[in-house]
Structure formats: structure tokens, C-alpha cells
Image 1 (tube, rainbow, N blue to C red):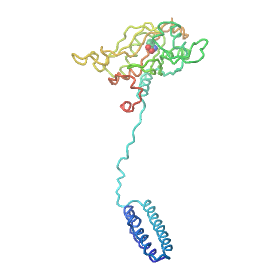
Image 2 (image 1 turned 180 degrees about the vertical axis):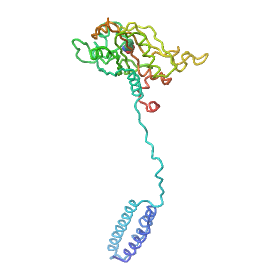
Image 3 (image 1 turned 120 degrees about the vertical axis):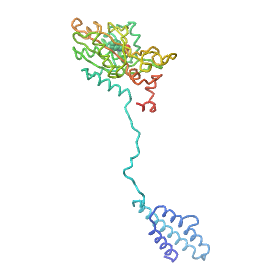
Image 4 (image 1 turned 45 degrees about the vertical axis):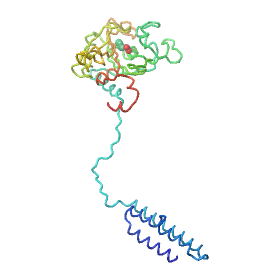
Length: 349
Ligand code: PHE
């Protein structure tokens, strides 16, 4: 080893011993390796070396450079393993917060509705989303070609028809679970059927997939008072005290008598007016419709194998998205927002 080589390496070693931070190591690296650094300076001295010694000098410089690199690299590894001195860490500081996920608010609503009805002895049922025409219509007193079927515009599935049950459909309402429940359970029945339902509509108040919850109660001596009391119980539990309800005469093939059920609007307190001049934008009349209800038609009971002389029952079917919107007083003017999956909207619930 030549004097230059040895002297340089020793000097570097000494400086490395005194180095304790990576910032110091960085400046030491540039002291040796930068364009105007020690090594380049030594390399450039090759010009003043006699011609026959140039080759040996060059070789020596290359070895020196490699040795210096190794030493510096070793130090860098050493420093990276060493806990940094002088950096004060407060272990009691809270960590970074991660964004919190949540369930879709329709799922929360389903859970809440299930709990409310379980408390009064109803059992949750689930029936097929892909259903036969028979359960969606015929068994509900709507024979093929009956105009009432137009109220339940339906998606049909390209599948072979069933000899008894007809074509395959995406169930347009949870009422298709009524006959299935009668066949499966028999009397008495206290069912809450919550499911996805499908109709080919897409506008501000409709999405092609939505949810309904269907109550069905059949026993001896069941009457309208009982239906009204149950809906009132649901409303108080779900919306809180102070909301009014009304049953409005209506027509469904599978209930007689039939009603639509309205709840008083939360935004205008049931008055239909925001102030003396402004109509309520959401309800316009003080009332909002939740869905249909009525006393189960004797033909439907018969179809389900239940003696309509001895037993009676009621049913209702409400839309979940719509019920939920009324609870929150959201003033949501486009129902499609619910399924656009914009996190900025969804994370508010
Ligand atoms: N199935 C009806 C609808 O979707 C609602 C309903 C259910 C009406 C039960 C009466 C009884 O509109």
C-alpha cells in the first residue's frame, strides 16, 4: 500500500469513528466522493505522475476508492441499526387515525327493523329473490292477465317455465313470502320478511332494486285494530314519539279491506307548509306514504291451506329506503343517491 493510500484510509477511518449521525456521514461522503472531493483530487494528480508509473497509480487509486466506499457503507448500515440519539419520542401520543368503515345505512335499518319486530314476537323470514310467478301473483289472488299485475312491473328471467308455478321472476314485492310462510309454518304466523325487491324503474323516487319489509300476522281473532296497533308500535319505535299515522283506503288484490299507510311529515310537522307561504318540498301535504297494508284476503288464506272461517290475518309491506329517509328528515330529493356508492354521502350515517 502506498503512503497516499494508507494515509487517506487512516484519515477516513478516524473521521468515521467520530461520526455518529447520518447527517455527519452524508457530509463525510461528499468530502471524499464529491466532484471536488479528496478522491477526485487524488485522481487528478495522475497528470503529474511520470508516464511509466501512471498505470500503477491509477490502479492504486481505484483500490483506494473501493476501500473508502466499503468503509462508508459499513458505517451507514451501523447507523441505521442504532437508535437515534437525541430524538425524543412521546409514546403517549395517539397514533395516526385510519379511516373508519361502516355498514351501508340500509343494513343498519334492516337490523333495527328486525329488532323492533322481534321484541313483539315476530320471526324474521327470508324467501327467494328469484321467485316463481305463482308466489308473486297467482297465489296472491292475481291470475294471469289480471290488470293489477301491471302495478308490479316485473323482471322476467330467461328460464324454462315451471309447469305449476309459471315463469321465473325477480321478486317484485315481499308479499311473495306470504304463501311460502303459510306453507312452511302454518298457523299461527307472526312473520317479518325483509328482502330485496326488483321493478324496472329508474327515476328520482325509484331504483330497480330496493328493499321491503313485510309483516304477516295470522291467528284466530286478528283484526284491523291489531294491524293498526302494530304499525303504530313500529312507528313510535322507529321514528320516536309525536308522529301521527293514518290508514287511507286503497286497493290490493291480496288484502280486503286494503289501505295505504301514511306517516306525518317530520320536516313540516304534518302541516304541509314550512311557513305561511312555502309548501313543504318533501311531502307537499303533511303526509308521507310508507306502503300498503290490509286484512289478508280469504282467497289467499285458502291458497296457503288456512281455514279462512276460523283464522284471519293482516299484512303490510313497506319500503325500507323510503322509511329510512323519513326518519332522518334527509330532504333527499333523488332516491338514486342511495345506491350511487358515493362515500361522501354514505359516511354521514
Ligand atoms: N306488496 C304491496 C306493494 O309492494 C304492499 C302490500 C303488502 C300491500 C302487504 C298489502 C299487504 O305495493
